[in-house]
Amino acid sequence: MALSHDPLWPRAGSWPAPSGPADLTILGVPAHLTSLSPTNAHETPAAVRDALQRYSPALVEQGEPIDLGALRFADAGDIVDPDSPEGEDRTRARVAELAAQSRLVVALGGDNSVTYATAQGSGTEALITFDAHYDLRDGVSNGSPVRRLLADGLDGRHVVQIGIADFANSVAYAERAREHGITVIGMDEVRRRGIDDVVAQALEVVGDRRTHLDIDVDVTDRAAAPGCPASLPGGLHPWELRALARGIARHHSVVSADIVEIDATVDAPDQRTVRLAALCVLDLAAGLALRA
Image 1 (cartoon, rainbow, N blue to C red):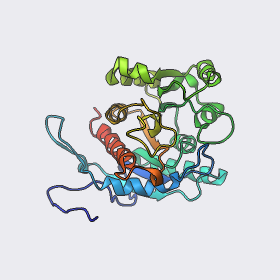
Image 2: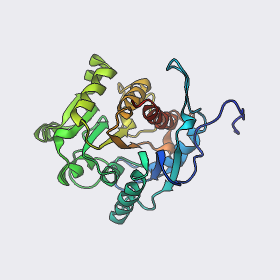
Image 3: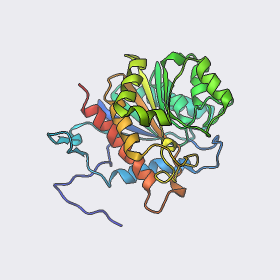
Image 4: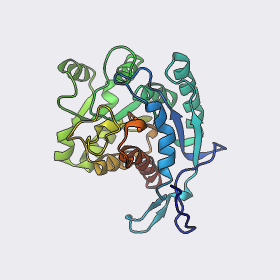
């Protein structure tokens, strides 16, 4: 169905190709071949781009309305064959190029394996994840990007994992996280302490280090994210995920992010999961606009 047109209600999305400095640049990284669960996550970047156009680039709850359209947005298209080692090299190189001229590069997945090359491409020195899972598995898959980053030299003391869930992980991987000094803030703890307190702790851990934010949407409650193969009942509410994303993105150290683990082909008919991902893109942009 065609969307309505109103010159006083501009739509988000449909951003131009990169041309000079940008505030936020999106890049499709449609990885899916190494996923532990069968997925068509490679279909998702296009779906998120379409969903962006359902929303306006306007903040209206900040006292004075803020037009995010004043930011410089760009869309760098998609990485070809990102699942192969050569594809990961292409991802690193492209993210590095975009990060040199963008305040924030946002990779649209694809499965969680994209975190590895995306974070390295932006020169990550610290990592924050919103995820029900540790992603510390051995091998190469959507369950291993955090372990791979640690193996390549990322200091676990500069990693924060928010939303880790019961019955979605193993004791062995919990011990692995502890051994590496990772700061883990579980699902229940997020709710008990509140968003602002959790954001403050995460930002204290990463400090001024170049930081990558991994938004694995399967941290969200399954009723709100049916398009995530590994989402659980009892996960974060959409507003919690969005508030976390906006809060973290307000910090100057955050230079890259990814939004991953959605299979648009199995989403609910109302596209609730894909639309949530699109709103996360805009919340990241809102964080940029609200930086001190």
